Image (tube, rainbow, N blue to C red; front, side, top):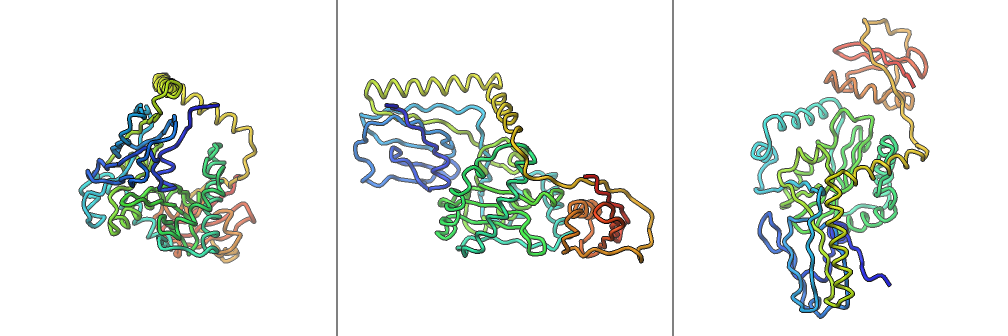
Length: 388
């Protein structure tokens, strides 16, 4: 019989709003306030246990039940860093950016938002008060397709897609319990970016997000965080937790970094104590090996193994070149809501981004079916050639 049980604190904390029974209280470091206190009925003498709790975020300060029967190891988890945005004052988002970020970063974010809103027929929507099943299914299916394309393109596995049914059911339940939200960015009423957030008291967890690759030039991830931050400032949240993962956009937005630790809670009997000591030693060994990039090499091996799997999505590639103004009276214009436009839609969105022109001011003509097109805008004329 295996004595050791493994638990993921961060997963339970963010998704299930559950705190394991051996924690007596939690205090948030960022505001020095009580976040959680166990009810008296949970303080009873524990059963015989040996539990390894990973990914405990250190913006929480724990206390454990004071029991002579329990022992606790606290082991730092090396190279697992979290990023968050700490909301210190409830102020307008523009003022918040001035207080917390460099001029260069503010300029970049404002330029992204302004160009997106100039070029596209945009809309933003935060769903936080419940959702109908049909609407939810449409949004989740759209998000799933975005995630499938993104991770097939990167040739990497994805835990959310592997456990899609779990996240589908969980998110629907939490949305209708007002413990989650979905933020949607749309163009012409079509979702092009979707972000699922989980809520626990004054913390908002930015959890599952993806975007339509055709709009990749527009920095939709940054625009999404900007708008979610704006919403959070108006709804009394104090921390936007972006979780772990060494991604550049998280580092850029983070004004509050934190680390994680592992808690090994065990009954003070010789066999449970031995199992706990072995687990603590194993985690310390892993921390030591991280100095030599062993974990990164294992991750690379996993990617190589995944590359043997069939990639489900293919995407069109193209070239864009400037051309002289050409006569267009014998050419067939393409409506931008027509299926034929889909072939070159990414090329068009890339082009209007680079030119900074509204999409409603351009016209697309077909020169040769499925292969050559002419894009006429107020600023230039460009030829788009499909290469794959």
